[in-house]
Every structure is written in structure tokens, then in C-alpha cells.
Amino acid sequence: MNYMLGKWHVTPLSEVGPTGPFDGWPLGRGYDRFYGFMDAETDQYAPELVRDNTPIPTPGSFASGYHLPADLVDQGIRYLAAHQADQPHKPWHLWLALGACHAPHQAPADLIRGYDAQFAHGWDVERERRLARQIELGIVPPGTALPARNAGVQPWDSHPEPVRALMTRLQSAYAAMLDHADQHLARLVAHLEA
Image 1: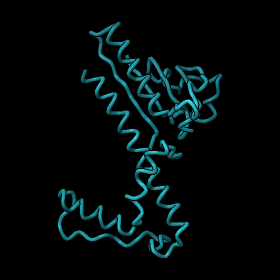
Image 2 (image 1 turned 180 degrees about the vertical axis):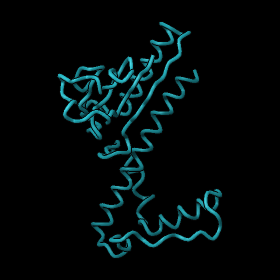
Image 3 (image 1 turned 90 degrees about the horizontal axis):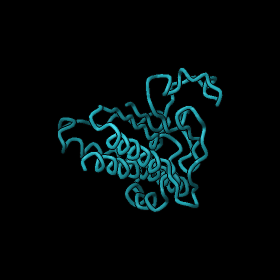
Image 4 (image 1 turned 135 degrees about the vertical axis):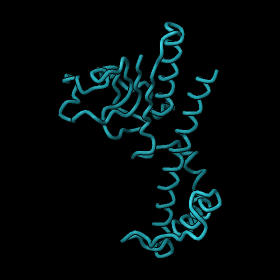
């Protein structure tokens, strides 16, 4: 059995409507089950979801605590648990494409706030820290120098405080989305190892 969950961004937009054609959808491309979204990005709290070839309502809301990466992993665990119960001798393939680090970066607010202090120093200091860590880990050789900033990227300290606060929050939201995705991927791995 082949299961696909999450971002399916390979069907032309002209073929994504509820009447198909469905040959470019996951089930038309060899998957037995699909649960996810058919676009490059989606709202993490109110995604436009599809189950197999049928649009479905979002099973929760922001107010109820719904968040797409958790839902996708929950669905993946359900697919695999059912597979193990019904046909444990048959192989399976699960493709999980969270889309979590693609815009919009809508991580839970408490996770975002938890990263604000980590990135408040700005991108110039962050570049230096990341290069030092890469050298320490042996990813790049000692003596490696940072390239010049990209064209149009101004020094961090040249921006007024409100802009620095906004940029810090954007980086914090990105990091929090990655953290949140990792937490839910860990749940899937724990299920597989159980």
C-alpha cells in the first residue's frame, strides 16, 4: 500500500478542482490513499484538505487547537496502524510532505515566542555563529570566510527597532515551524519503533 500525506504540488492548477480530472492527483499517480492539500502552501489552521479525491472540511479550528502538521502525522499513524492490523505481511510506503517550513509560517504562538531571544541579535551575528558552528562540526574547513551579504541586504543595525523586531519575529516563526514539525515527526518515528 502507498500512502501520501500533506503537500501535493505537482498537479496543474487547472486540474485541481473537485471534478478533476484526477489522473494527476495522488491516487491517479499510484497512491492508494491521500490526505493533504493540492497546492504549494496552505493555512496551517484552516487548510483546504482532500481525502483521496474528495475535498473535505477542516477537522478542527484554531480555537479548538487544530494544526495541520499534527493532523497529518495523526492520519499517517492511523494509516500505518490500520495497515499493520489488516495486512502486516504486505510492504507499505508513506510519503509525508508537511509543507511546514513553506509559507505561511503559522507555528503555535508559545513556540514562536520561545525563539525570539535566540534571534534578537540579528542576521549579521547569526551568520557568524552559524559559520563558527559549521567549522566546529567539520562541515566547512577552518579558515572559511563568509561571503558578502546578498545585494540589497542591509546591516542588521541599520534598521530601526520596529523593523528588527519584525524580522526577529519572522525568523522565530520559521524556526518554530521547524521545531513543531520535528516534534510531530518524532511521534511518527516513535510509532514506527513501537
